[in-house]
Amino acid sequence: MAGRTDNSVVIDAPVQLVWDMTNDVSQWAVLFEEYAESEVLAVDGDTVRFRLTTQPDEDGKQWSWVSERTRDLENRTVTARRLDNGLFEYMNIRWEYTEGPDGVRMRWIQEFSMKPSAPVDDSGAEDHLNRQTVKEMARIKKLIEEAAARAGVDGGIPAEGKDSVRDATGNGDPGPVFRVLLRAEIADGKEKEFEDAWREIGQVITGQPANLGQWLMRSHDEPGVYYIISDWTDEERFRAFERSEEHVGHRSTLQPFRTKGSMVTTDVVAAMTKAGQTW
Image (cartoon, rainbow, N blue to C red):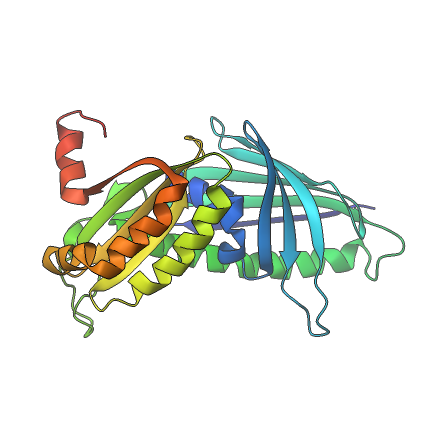
C-alpha cells in the first residue's frame, strides 16, 4: 500500500507572484512555518537541489533532508522528490498552478510509502501530512495575498484605487501609498550573503514610522535578480530616509553583492509601460 495526499488552495494574487514566491526555495524558512532553515545546494537550469531543516519538536529534535525540484514554467507545474528518504521508502511531489476567476489554484500532490521501521504507517503519515499541508497552505495564502496587496494587485489585475490599498493612518481608513520598486542583480555565489544582509537591513527599514512594509522576491526567470517592493506613507519621508546617513550605510553594506541595479517608483513604471519601454 502507498500513501497519497492531494490538497489545494485558491490564492487571490497574480499567478507570477504565486509562482515566484512559492518556488523561491531560499525563502521557504520564511514562507513555511515548519522549516527552520532552507539551504540551496545546487541549481542546474530549472532544477534546484536543496536541504530543509525543520523547527525543533517538543523534544528539541530537528529533522533534515535533501530534495530536488524541477520547475516547468510553461505548464506551471513542479515535480520534486526526496533524495535522502529518511523514514520514507520514497516521496514524490507534484505542484500545479491553475488560474481561475477567483485567483490561482495551487495544488500539492504527495505520493509516498513509509519504511517498515517508521513509527507510523502510510495511513498515519497521510493524516499528518494532510493536517500540516492545510495549515501551511493557509499561511502561504495569507503571506502571498498580503504581498499582492502591497503591490496594489489582486488576481493578476491592477487593483482599483491602488494608491489607497494600505491603511496609512492607523485608524482603518485608507491612506495614500508611495511605492518603490527596486531591482538588484547579485553576483554569482553571493545570493545567500545578500539575502542575510537584506533581512537585517529590512528589519531596520520596517521599523521606520513612515514605512508600511516591504517584500523581497527572487526571480526564477532571471538568474541572480531580486526585486524589492517597499511601501511608504509619502514620497517626502521616503526621500528623507533615502538620504539619511543610516540608509547610505545600508547601501554600502549591500554594494559588494551587487553587479548592477535600479530603483523606480510605481507611477514611473506605469508611464514606462504605457510607452512600451523597459527598464
